[in-house]
Length: 89
Image (cartoon, rainbow, N blue to C red):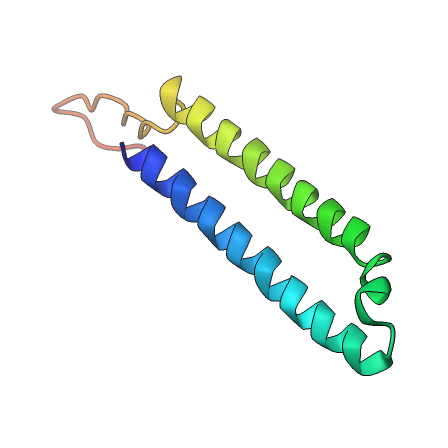
């Protein structure tokens, strides 16, 4: 359930970021006089950036979940201590 909420929140953040970029780009293009035609060159870069960040997040999360599910995140066990002996220096 927590994973679903997290993924939904991340999707909303990404969509809000894309919307904010679109609003900024439209405002900047309108000031240059190009209007909507000025946005044609910007969208491929936005799409490439979103896909790159999404792929990086997917890789890092898969590594984290893989290591957790296979026990790599467990603390190391301390060696058993023998009683009656002094520790080596």
